[in-house]
Length: 266
Image 1: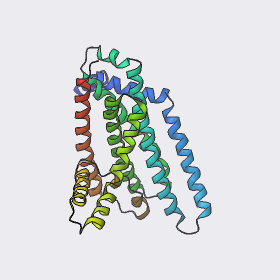
Image 2 (image 1 turned 120 degrees about the horizontal axis):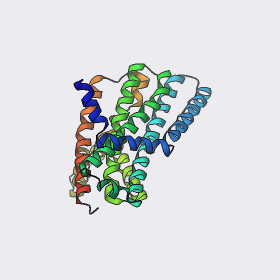
Image 3 (image 1 turned 30 degrees about the horizontal axis):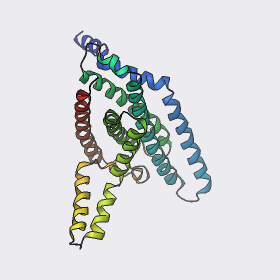
Image 4 (image 1 turned 135 degrees about the vertical axis):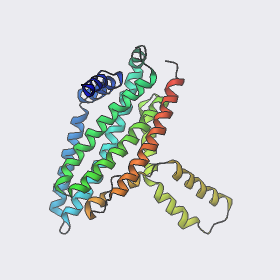
């Protein structure tokens, strides 16, 4: 009886209602139709690859499919978050929501959880096809870490759209952040290889700057690795490390988004 009361309160809470409307918006804007279209494109790519490769066909198919789905998921989720929030600013829907008797924190958390649900459904849909080409446990690890990656991307998109209020600027900033976070490990290796013996001020400054960026940015290169599906190399320890990294960055980004939302004159 107590459990039913708690569930009923959660179902009627403003946060749950706002999250529900975010998922409903995804359905009405045919977001999941785009996901299914990308699903079909990925299937076509791996079937074509299966016809042209002579050896290790399944390995090539699983790695290509995982890479394509990962990029597609980041693209559609970030674009959905940005366009959804920009539409609310342009149509003054956000002012209508904030005129209701709940706080800005409730509004932002409701939107955030709605984007989380959308990201979870997206990662599950993209992971279904991989079950045919890779081990079940490795696919689960891949889906879980892809969901973590989409959480970070959704939260950074929310932060940027609150700052820019413009689709092109916010989406460009999200893509720049994602590319930098994906390549920061490579940049570190390049700085160590080329500048290792350099003692000039400019070289040391660049090296220190890259190191500082690596401390600040999430290492998205560790998320949803295609190698897990090919070599069955994914471990629970890696998954837990990624989950902890995601919790820290999502908490910081949501806090920054709340700060920006409260300082806005709406």
